[in-house]
Length: 531
Ligand code: ADP
Image (tube, rainbow, N blue to C red):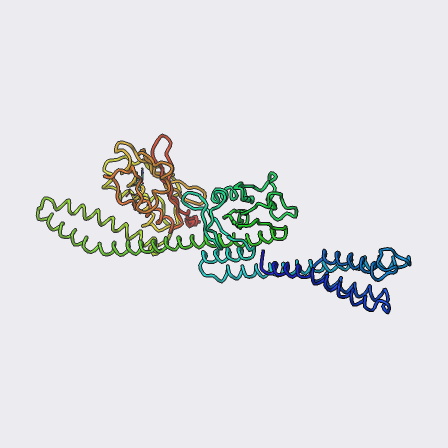
């Protein structure tokens, strides 16, 4: 298929007439001096011609020359001349020795030639693989590296086209990620669906010129044996025009390699093994494309996140000053008896709270939340939190369930711990019917203190239970008249996190939600007993 192979074949063809010409010339020359030459001279000269022919034209020419020279030897140089009969029985020995030496020499030369050819091919393969590695590593962009790998495979196997097919994320269909050579011709069969089969089965397949598809037979559980020494019949078929091989990285199939040619593709076991090595490079190329796409996506997410954090920090900061002014002006108007001033003040307060939440969120995201970690008694955290929700609570019942006796203490920042608890209590008040009670319990669980806020509200569907902790997330069915921008739970979780606490939600038996908030338990210093 390749250029060197073609010139070798041409040379071998030319060796035939030349060798016979040489044999004829040698015979003529020896004939001219027949009376003065010995049998041994004839044998040696003919042997020389046979060896030359074998070296230039291969085994078949060597053997044919040996037999021809044997006949000429007998006919022209052994008495009685011009018959194949032999006078001296010892001459049979000379002839037989000549024939055997000629044939064995032809065989040995051919074998050495084959070995040299195999060694040349291995060296060529090693060079190709090295080239593949260099191409794959030196090209900056992952897509360009994959295209380079496809180019090397196409030229190495001397096929018309080499394509790498990978699965599209949006619908799972297979499409071309890289191609080299003339891949324009219409495929005999639907290459994409065959590629999907190859990837699913993890086995190779061929397309034939008669538009049929042949799939690699696979014993159950056995590895597909593309490189097995015994070529499966479907692979050495004369009619194979395209070969599809799954691309594997460890145990994962990352794509499919398809090589196609206008003439039959025939690969011997060594070439198939080589194809597997090449396919591994293609698989690595595909993996690199995937990883770099993922890295690009992660980077753009990171940049978008940074932009959002900067925006939140900037906007919330800039809103503070005008809000304070509005509030002060509204307060002044309210004092002077202006009717609508009170509601302006209330709205300014609401906006102020939202801006404060935004500022907290940006501080949490930036890891800049000021903390003052210390021993804090749980009763005190609960007491301050209840104090803070007094206005919103009105006359709603909040049942407190805390152990009596030795007070529990947490290692935390009291202000932040109170804010977490206040957020949970406010949500319970906002989202549960006014006539239902809310339960606030405190428990020690191992080396942690757990605060629980349980309500009889609508609860949160299981698929939303984690999402409600992301900033700005409000479920679709959230009441628009209740709650704010969807920041409360995100801030609660962030604040718990920075003091090694956790916040999570569970459904409550009999309906409603249970929000749990835990903190590391603090061992209170033991007081010495009085003597
Ligand atoms: P906000 O209350 O401002 O909307 P949150 O982050 O506090 O923001 O809450 C996010 C969403 O979680 C709320 O919109 C609400 O739908 C839901 N949610 C929070 N607490 C409760 C609760 N106790 N019962 C039912 N739903 C709740």
